[in-house]
Amino acid sequence: MPASASVLVLNSGSSSIKFGLFDISAAEPVLLCSGLLDEHEAKPRLVVKNPAGEVLFQKLREASDTDSGHLFADVLGFIEDHFGKGCLRAVGHRIVHGGPDYSGPVELTEEVTAQLAALTPLAPLHQPRCLAPVRTIRAIQPALAQIACFDTAFHHRLAPPASRFAIPRRFEARGIRRYGFHGLSFEYVAGRLAGIAPDLAAGRTVIAHLGNGASLCALRDGCSVDTTMGLTPLDGLVMGTRCGTIDPGVLLYLQQHDKMSAEAVQHLLYHESGLLGVSGLSSDMRTLLASREPAAREAIDLFTFRAAQQVAVMANTLQGLDCLVFTGGIGEHAKEIRSEIGKRLAWLGVRIEAAANDASRERISTGDSTVGIFVIPTNEELMIARHCAAALQRAQ
Image 1 (tube, rainbow, N blue to C red):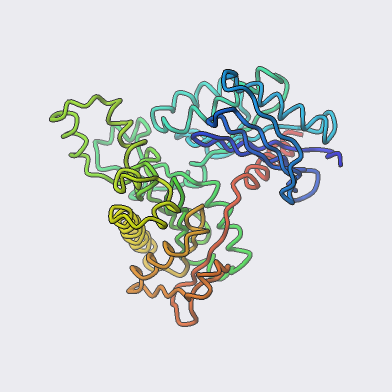
Image 2 (tube, one colour):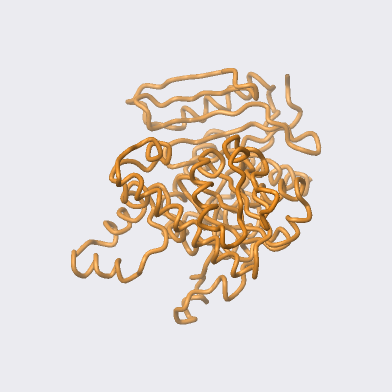
């Protein structure tokens, strides 16, 4: 069925790119198809499925073909063939870091793209991956509008003391402050919570986005007032391969005593730490939960300890806690992790109903829990589609 107006949403990860095509001709974007571009398999792979999960299109390229532009050309060609020539109005991109200047969606001109590329040192694992498709698509279809939606935007109004580091103020004047990330996820989940439990959403909420990347957001009346990530996506919780909060003295020790270069320390913190570093086994929570190795249990224990600890920090910012929401791959699917975090927060009035938790129901708190507890799947792609539709409407 042809779409009168559609937006292609790209959500770039470290080894693959998730995408969705949304019809934006109605008030709420409607998913037409979704897919995956996986560039790290033996052969680069493109798969497109309809909302029911049926494969509409797939293609493998030879491992020797390292030009990802061919896969993007395949995606754009599929959209034109299947949904009609001229239906695609724009491409929306999840961009991890917007820095101090970008508080909302913006068209990705050459100048804006260059400014965002300059922020790469603040998100070296993510920013290049987010921007590479922008340049590729521009080369294929220069006239096609491309729109950036930022993970930092939801936290843009963070104010001191939550936004401030205890370093000389001249550095803050240069933009060295806490920015926060996972904003598109937090924004979507906050909107869903407002529809499910408006009274709780208007109060003091902590959303736990737990996945390979993980962070918490403290919200008051649906607005971000504190978060666990800072200048970069390294801070806060234990993650798949990232360390989270660490004594800066450890880094000085590694550089001064072990003579590690800045590049080696960066690789250690982003790629060798977190669940992988502690377990020595895997960065995947599913693998660790299935393992009988003591080190796997120790990694899980640290993950839940740090998550519960930081929920308490967020509750302190809020001066109480009315609602706790789990989202992200681990938050949505790992009932054991939700249970362990809940046990650690029992002193705060958190009570999780075992049967509801086992079934991953929407509300998993017991009747006597003083905190409403929910499991809400996130949808960053839909959030980006909404932002793109609004931006295109404003541009008319």
